Amino acid sequence: MPVLPTTKLSRSDLADLNAFLTVENHRSFTKAAIELGITTSALSHSIRNLESRLGVRLLNRTSRTVSPTDAGAALAKRLALGFEEIGNALAELDQHRDRPAGRLRINVLSDGARLLLSRWLPKFLDAYPEVTVEVAVDDRMVDILAEGFDAGIRFGGTIPEDFIATPVSRRLRWVAAASPRYLNRSMQLAEPDDLKNHNCIQLRTGAGVIYRWEFSRAGEHRVVDVSGQLCVNETTLGIEMALAGRGIIYCLEERICSELERGELQIVLPDWSPTEPPLYIYYPGRKQMPPGLRELIEVLRSEASL
Image 1 (cartoon, rainbow, N blue to C red):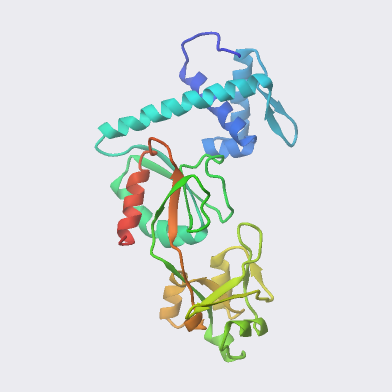
Image 2 (image 1 turned 30 degrees about the vertical axis):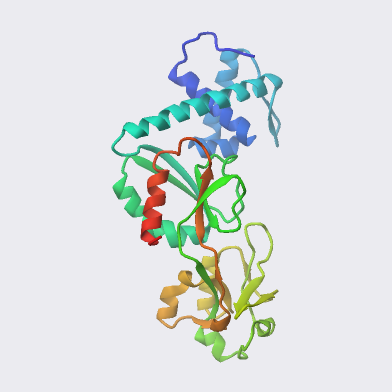
């Protein structure tokens, strides 16, 4: 396996080794650069410098793919163990701090971002000024380990196995709603199947499928494949289109509380509105939690009165 020409590693050596390991994990310079917070050109320069100092090619590059050479794969395997041990050692130092310090990367659904982080993250930032937080809002189902995140926020029932998951909201009520303007010119609704005769604003989920609307009443469960002129891939735009009278939206009741209070939207089929599992924050079951994660969970749970 290649070794650096000196046993004493400089700050530059460690930075370049970490850069290489990040590229190898992502198999992408672009994704690795985003995680490291640098440009792709700077990252490429670091890798070239590292390979030059080692005298060994670590990565095979084409216009579309990045893959490790045999030497690169061997080095990455050893580096992963070494950096994990360094991370654990640094995490143990937090036991001796009065307050956590470090960087925290969170991947969160747009609903979680609006309902949780936009409300309560400022309180966490004020309480823990030595923690820097990066938030990626993404409705795709992301492998948080592969993408370099410390934790994710998802709906209960969608979290991968082998992660520790903690609820950070109460159970959530899902509703169908529309503007008075739309409802006044449309057929009345008595049950979920009546939605098939309405202009519904469809939602394409992060998994790439169009969401089927779910309803329940007194133990009876209905799932409706709605149709309509408009399909969106994020709730905020769907709500805005419902406010514009373009159809019926299906979303969390908490997302439209203000609009409901002002009468700008009205819930349809309220007796059929289901209550589903809460939002969870989840993270790998490591020995040491990243700095600030435990405190963030405490803030979110306390604000949700859990």
